[in-house]
Image (tube, rainbow, N blue to C red; front, side, top):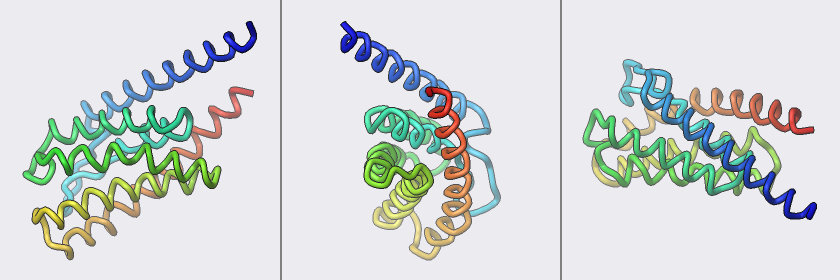
Length: 172
């Protein structure tokens, strides 16, 4: 009986966290909070990868991957350029955020390192595919990595560590 109760609580928590992170992704995608306009080559800075990172750390790769899918779909639907109108670029790297984040977290148990690697997966995936598929030259992609990727990584680490530790502390 206790085992069944534990399993039911686990499913309930996973479903709740999935729903909340999915809803957060939708809100970020529908408001300027998720895609912050900036006057650089990228056009927008984003924090939409953070729910995918949190999902992977808190509940595993499936939650992170599905939350990343929501991010990718919003990128595709809001495509303001041919770059993000390409489903491979808009969706592919975003799905991988949850998988990479979970793998790094599982190996290191470091929320900070997992968040940094999840952000790097997004930035490197999008910029690498943009160069490979001919949407931008490598020099422009590197500029985006430095002007957006690094600040996004710092913000993602700060948000992820703060939220994941607070949630873990509240479970005790």
